[in-house]
Length: 489
Image 1 (tube, one colour):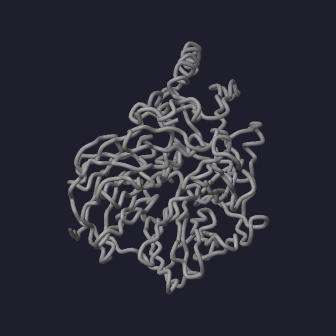
Image 2 (image 1 turned 60 degrees about the vertical axis):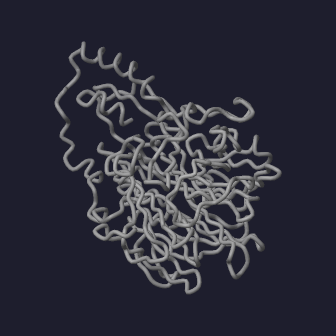
Image 3 (image 1 turned 90 degrees about the vertical axis):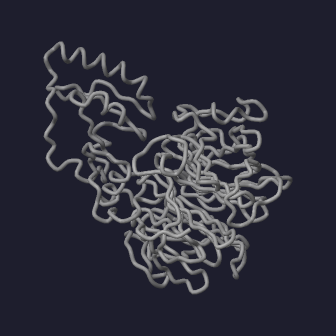
């Protein structure tokens, strides 16, 4: 849509209509936050009671309506679309209207419409809509933040959390540029995975539809997967060579999160804190390919990538990974043994698990595309609302568990792997807000990223533009201090 607005700035007027699927998406402030996050400058109607949806007989998300200059609907398109294919159609329409003298080429005065796109005062701090967070526990350790709307990575100290910034890579403008951290460019980065053997970081560069590699040697960024163009159709594992296709030649679609599985036969590790790059990448990198509703896998040594699980159909279907279905998977986490891959399957409000030995996909929580809520308990009664992140807590004193960012419920939840039930762990729930303190009273606003390390849970509190830290022993929540004027090495 942005491409069409740029191509036809004075002849096409775009009006967005937001008809929400999830209850939490109906709040006008939630819509305004989403408008800011995605940099939308055209007016957006909050159709919270589906009046516009019904009046235009919509049946699918998204639906594109073409309206004649005199107000009559003349065409519609349901589902995603490619701007390149639509541009000739729009040009033909405009030529016809121009010939009839119906076009008014002066900019429209929409008054305050689009004002929600203006950066809100709360985003004037160091972060803007941070999407994910990761932790490097080697040596003194690092906290790595995907500062998504600043299109950069912010690296802080783990052992000493005094606000000092260690490194920044990318930003402030979006782009797809490799090179040293001050020259590299990202576009809305999200998931981050670390190879603790080599210190190499991998980044899901979501709106570049690419996977990037960040070297411990000078922070050099390189693109290792994706063409920079979005894949407009999905492929299945059976449609690619057995070992996958060359990763740099394959278009990806909104990679949202990553999980790294080490190669047990890989070479020696570098020393903690070393800035030496072995250039010996090995292991498997799992990718939550949200745009095609699949999980993909990249063989780092071979430089090849292919679909791993999911047919590409948006649904909740268990079974063998080749025939299972997901719906906008947005969070990944591996257990310590590397046997199970957990998936936050956002559009089905589900927690899924993939047995990496058998390849079987199972649903631990969730019932379907239109089954959601804020209810604890076992799978038959429990409900989540659009979860975006998952983290494995192997050292949970109450037994192994999985922590979930129950995003639209503004909570962190704990799934007990033995009892197979979920309970609220932190956050007072809707409406979203901001408050530190005891876990049950703390408030979050659409948390989207989680990482567990050294008895702490790090939370990318997306709409609060902050990273929060939950002490897993005391269950107290605080805000991570970030002071860009202070630097540490």
